[in-house]
Amino acid sequence: MRRRDFVTLFAGSAAGSLAPATLTQSGGWGTSGAATTSPYPTATSLLSAPIELAGNWGHMLPRAAEQVVERMRHACLDGVRLVSDRQPTRLRVDEHTSGPPSVWLHPDGSTMAWIIVDIGERDWSKLAYQFGHELGHVTANSWQAEAKPSPPCQWLEEAMVEAFSLRGLGRLAMDWKQNPPFAGDNAFGDAIAGYRQNIIRGYTTLADSQALTGNAAAWFADNRSEIETPGLNPFAQAMSVTILAEYDRAPGCVEALGSLNRWPGRTGIPIAEYLQRWEASCVELQASPRLPVRLRELLRIV
Image 1 (cartoon, rainbow, N blue to C red):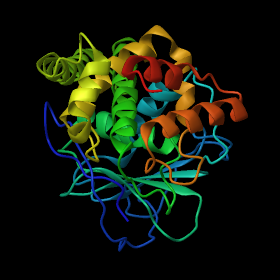
Image 2: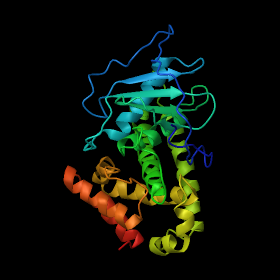
Image 3: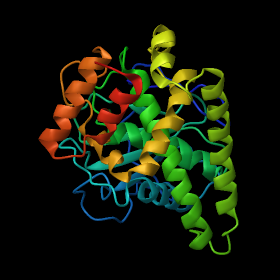
């Protein structure tokens, strides 16, 4: 099944749903149309898992798209301790010509995480952004068949992985300016930075209009029923900027994503219990619990 859908907002930002899993289990493809897999080492973690491309990439050279995906993976994960005991051994990035980006919850029992994107011709900023968000879900252990998103806490996972992607885009923009994957393309780093800033600007406007900026606890209490609507809703979008600031302030917060969703019920439990189980999972995996502790403080969850 498809884990979540995107609704376009602020330069392609999004929210989620589910659909039956009917895709074939075909391999990726190369310039000749034959199956291909990236030449990376045998997977030992989400950072080293081989990447394969699948789907309809039009006139885009597969190797070019693959380089962008690989650069974004490193931008998101370099320097992050990958603590999860449920990491995939392969990543498939599947380009669709319509429909929302998502993680496909394929029921074949394999250890491959299957990410679906939908971009325009050589729209590398959008590819990096969409891939980064879905990679965030994979990092948060939301890639296997049973990872069905559920209220009331799905909004919080969406906010965290959106911030994960925005953090990665910032790092990708700097890397691209210094060492572009395509010769002479340094200036495109500024385009990536601008794409990212447009999203952040839109989310910041939302946060201000919702009165999140001044008092997160009151914001949550006053809007809880709307906030807990599944998907990357406008409240989750606004919260992603707050979480991004936590990632920037304490990079160790990012590793806590690998401790998510390792308990029965996943996101389908009340937020107090969700944060409690997340903190316990961090302790079990020896990950920093700073992020769940900080969110509990911000929202005044007891």
